Image (cartoon, rainbow, N blue to C red; front, side, top):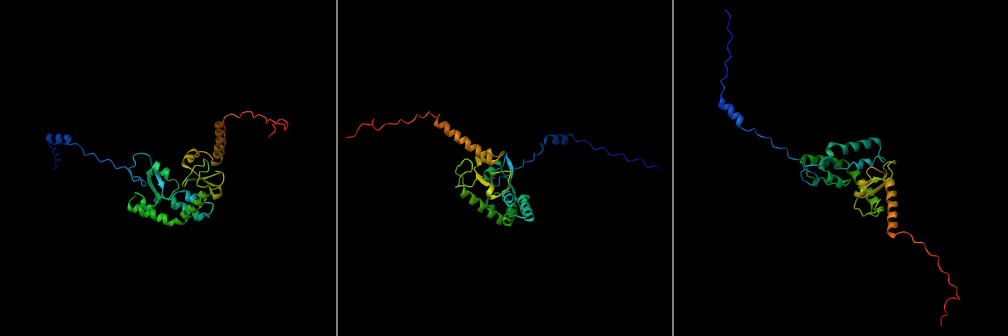
Length: 226
């Protein structure tokens, strides 16, 4: 005997349940909170950048003074994600090569522990970098190398980009000059600034008047004094 296939029972449609499903609004997912700037502590709505807490200038300016293995180890520590935080673009530009204290950053505990471990590993290089920079600042009399404006710390740049990074080829410039010299050479820009300053001074003085030759007086022409 052949078994007859069982007929599948059709589910009864409930119009009331279907209407309730349509009427109930779907729960909207809450928008993710914007990241917080590690320097100022304010939310980053636009202009988010990745900043290195221990600046990259430290391993770049030690390249000429370290052997290859020590230099690569220092570069890996500074360029690792453990040494990076999210900041505003403006806060990052203001920071430049300055060292920010780890305890003053607005980050989580785990991130602060990673930053502290990175800083302790490269602390001797940081101290030597800061000491050399302070000597250079004193040699420039706390003034910008280009415009001679007073500066507190300044931005470290090479005088000649064709030569390696050494302290004999280093100079400190203000933030304003750094924005102008980003695509050019400091040496050529310094010379152009000097010539522009000479032209400005000449314009202020006005055109040179033809100097009259001095009048020579004879002793006999002078009136006799009593």
